[in-house]
Image (cartoon, rainbow, N blue to C red; front, side):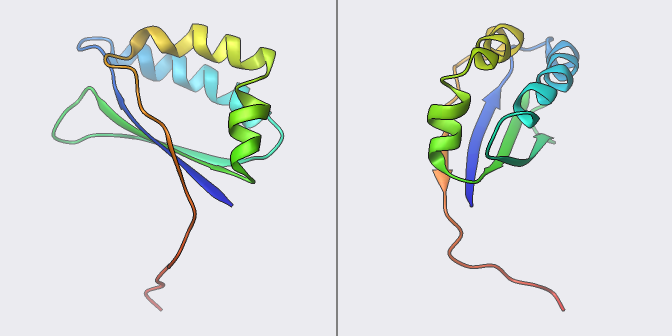
Length: 101
């Protein structure tokens, strides 16, 4: 399993529109092969800062499958105009977890 990590900076004043558009866009990504789950969090200190975390079965499912799909063009049209600057996306593999039990 791979974790996609994308810090997002939304143009100030567009946060509500972004969140509505992201709710629509989440159905697109959720339908893609290899998608496992996602979380979108809003920054407490910077209201226009967000963190997108997406679990994929593999990097290829994200980079080739999703980004190479026609559905990605719809995702881009819904979301990419909100970002300034455009986000840097990275992928991570788990090396350690902890459980409070």
